Image (cartoon, rainbow, N blue to C red):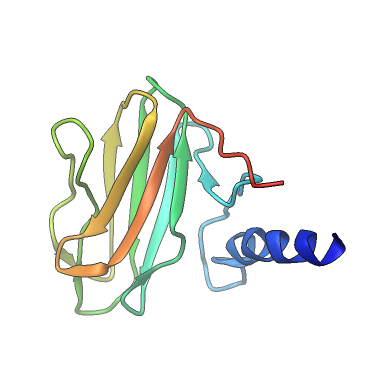
Length: 135
């Protein structure tokens, strides 16, 4: 049984470690399910080396939240597009380094995010839901 606990805990520990360090990364609050939680109505995601620094963001339902997109890839265009959210909110494709903000208010649900020109850069915005790890 301990082996299963270690296996289940590893992804959470790995997600919590992403973005840590002294390189100016945004502080990350990580929920038990491994999602980076919005704090005071804001949550930051970093694009670096053609990858997001987290595959999961979380925010409360029906409350405004600002997703800060911190593109640290010099001379590389990125955006963040919520492809299945109402009205498909998106930031503009912009060359890094640049910071952009995307303000949304969404009902409870799970919404896919992607960089439109780098389709491997995907993740989920979990809004108003708690994900319970398997037991």
